Length: 120
Image 1 (cartoon, helix red, strand yellow):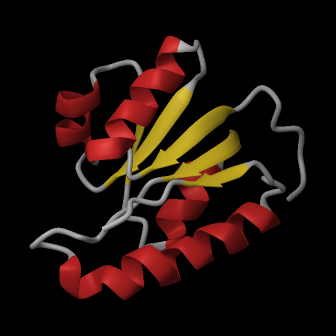
Image 2 (tube, one colour):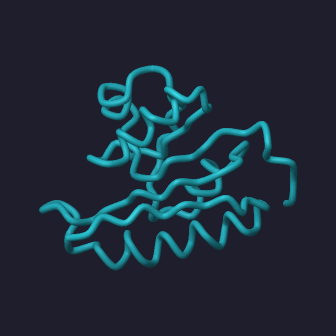
């Protein structure tokens, strides 16, 4: 599904994380429309406020990713599985899910993608 994404939002994956929340804040300060894919929309709103659009879902779910890409003009990937809760899913989150996001972004005609790396 190709389309004109110039007027869409910027999707931030990992937007409630340490670096992601700063990315979301900076984009909002620049006047960019932002949305965040989050497993818990209430927690995301507590962290980010009411301004970004929150799409409830999980980056490991293709259905959630496809839904979050609707109306998206660009993607910032700032996901990290380097916490006690998620370290066992590091490969799933940081490799497999990111590859799936890239596949779905290509299908949706989204070519503006930034991957933010955190050095451990």
